[in-house]
Length: 332
Figure 1 (cartoon, rainbow, N blue to C red):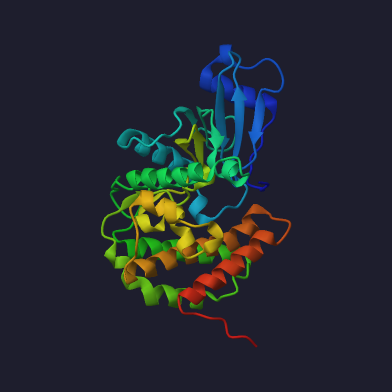
Figure 2: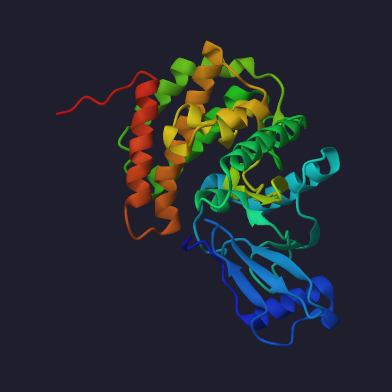
């Protein structure tokens, strides 16, 4: 996926980074040692072949001068913390982190090297029709189980993993909505709904947020395309940068409950341990889909999209969620 946030580097710079991480004896000599992994939407990632033949992955955060969403500021550091928590406190498979460089001495951005997982991307392989239906169903159930285990990690506050959080989920989630509205206003993007409309819907349903009293580690972006599968088993969960402490019902695997274009969530829900939702849970789930739809629209400006495909899709999804929350646009 193309985005102006991708901080691509020359082979010479990559060699310098490899030397800092693994030592001069493992720096590749021949050309063609770095292959860009293009599926991501935000960071640039390279599959690197070291001189001794071992493959690793390098992730580099966006350039310092590129504007990002408020929630994306310092996001790679949050990913490193999330990976540490998951690795230390659960049995969920995550890549091993080999080296972290936050100095900005070679590249003016945070970066880290991690283990290369030799497996297929679950989402892309399933989408290409290369997996049997039962393997896909089983994989989604496994994702639900793994996500539920991640949610057993309890944080010290609600909101960001690093830095100042909030004492309540209502306060933390309200800030997430307000940050997104401010991000949209900053670049003059049209959500199709006023900020007042969004705030009114949030206030009308905010009591449901008060049911959440324990801050759990939530990934926000754990879906099939952020996992790797081998021989029918999920062997790695990737891209933890959007993790926060909050309500497990906000997890991406449940998005299809309100937004059918994200696919049938039934198998994920089986693994996750959810069959039905109470009315307050349904209200929260709709608010979380509202938040996602807002981001889908707003981030198109920050990614530098040259067509309106994603923007138009996000606008349709936002309209649908607002309708589910009792707000229907009055024409003309």
